[in-house]
Length: 302
Image 1: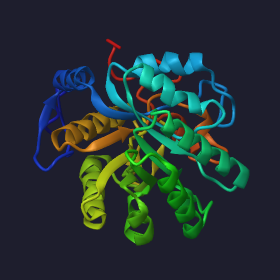
Image 2: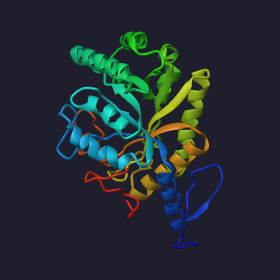
Image 3: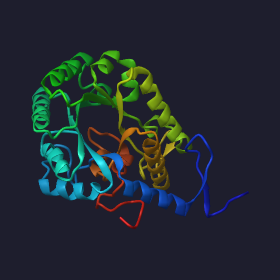
Image 4: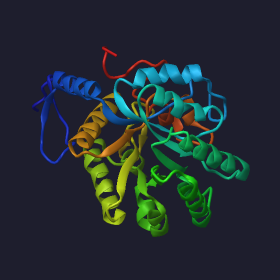
């Protein structure tokens, strides 16, 4: 037995590393101070859920926490107060990946599209996302999604790239959707494929390489990746504070070193993701870098 309390070994890259715990904290500080690419914006505070109206005050409070550490914000909807997020982000000097949330309600879908285009015309959208995992959820057919994408591309300003957000394999399996995108917006989650933590970064990197094979030179953005800090396991993938800390650190270091645009999921814990339509179980409430009370989980200095 060779246990040493001051050392940990984690197979999270192509070479083997033994890292002192203090070194991990130094690397975390370097990432936070240098500004990382992007973060998925968690708007809902305790007791709120999608559909509940958001206030500009709560958005601005959380945006101020994130702005010193990231260059981009990703939002998921442009109704029920979510349309305020891009404006507040711009006020904080952030770029925006703005999503229109599409589902099974035609009236809501129409409002989302109209609001996305209006925000883009105001100069508040740097990348437009038309739909998020609607094919995965089977909320729309591929033909219906392509119609929304074609309309958005026609009406959006020419300098605003348009894409669709879904799991990496959807872009492999649906060449028409891949072709319709100016930019591929891919969610890459080793956790949700049951990958054991020591191999998670390698697994995520392979997801990205598979996207490159079908992108034909198009811009690729990892629109979501993350690891939960609590809530149980999914096959071989186990949630833990240590695992979430290490996955965040290694994922963002890799993205920075390879100049890959990556949005980490997520900014704040949100209890609503446990049940309802999200259906993630207990892990749903624990994807944030900050907890539900807006305290950073992995360093006492924030």
